[in-house]
Length: 79
Image (cartoon, rainbow, N blue to C red; front, side):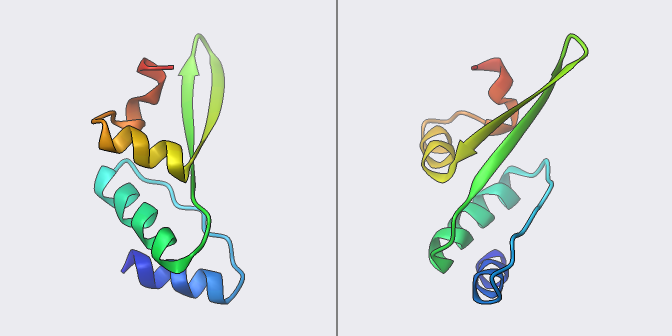
């Protein structure tokens, strides 16, 4: 389903913004965007000491982290 959504978004030149806590959803859209030939990035948000910090992780970084067992949902523990 993620591949179909990504393919349709690419075809219609539309940007998707998806929020999730699901690692399965993240993996599905990472793979779906690759299948569609579109770009993919994760914006990791963390609230630290009352300050919101956003970090952009591109598809290569996300894929590499997932392959090594790092849960990108907890990226602030590693950064």
